[in-house]
Amino acid sequence: MSVNSGGRLLGALAAVGAMVALCAGCGSDDGPTVARTVTVTASTSTGSSVGGDPTAESTTDATTSGADTATAPATAALPAEPPTNGAPALCANTKVTGTVDVVHPSWGPTRVFTVLGKGIGPQPACILAVDGTGTIRWSFADNNGESRWAMAASAPDSNNNMFVTYNPGRYDGIIVLHPTADGFSPIGADYATGPLRYYYAELQGPDASGAYAIKESSNDCEPSCAGGTVTSKILRWNGSSYVG
Image (cartoon, rainbow, N blue to C red; front, side, top):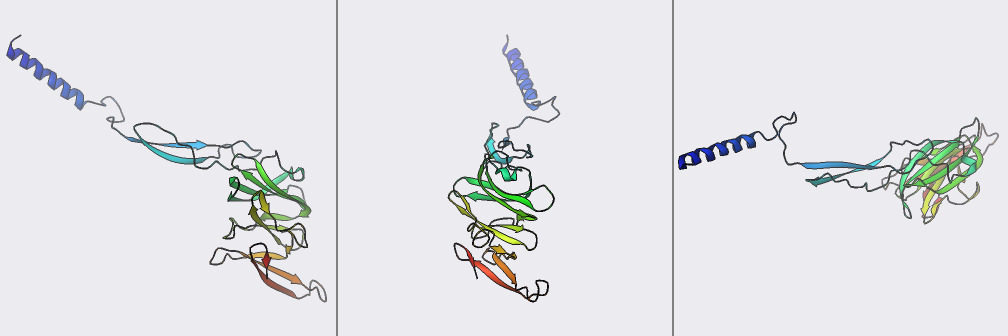
């Protein structure tokens, strides 16, 4: 082969190489292939619960370069419905009336449910704390017969207190739930001193610090309850109870 022939061959090969480079990605409707950063969203669902949403999930984004890599979510998905396993028998046939999400000091992300019986008239009621695995970690059952039973605030206040409104048939009351190492403290145990003690009561606030107070009223029923004098006082959190 002569020098001139060799030169012409090398030139032709170079031209072909250039055409190949220019046509990288030809024949694709998506245009040329380019280096890119791939963003992948990983989703995780936790357990299954009766009446729950099987599509409920918690997601997080992870950005990686040159590879499709999924990253697990930072927190587990919380159930849309409480499970039946572990629930008090008293509240087997109930409906969800409210939820509040909290981060419990012992077991982390938790959804607290208020549930009320589905029947007509005053019904049994429960409060159920369910963790990210779908396990009931704490419960509170009330068999006094409630006509109203729901969360009184959509989130804990600055004192980490949650509030449930109840009504046994005449006036609303407030139950206070404060987190403890093994669950929640419903401030006592009965109408006189316990969780149902704040009767004829409603939430006030939150104030500038993010704390709620409780407005508690009373009726002297003189000469009758319909014509009695109603007085009210404001109760504030002292670290262990609400006092006024």
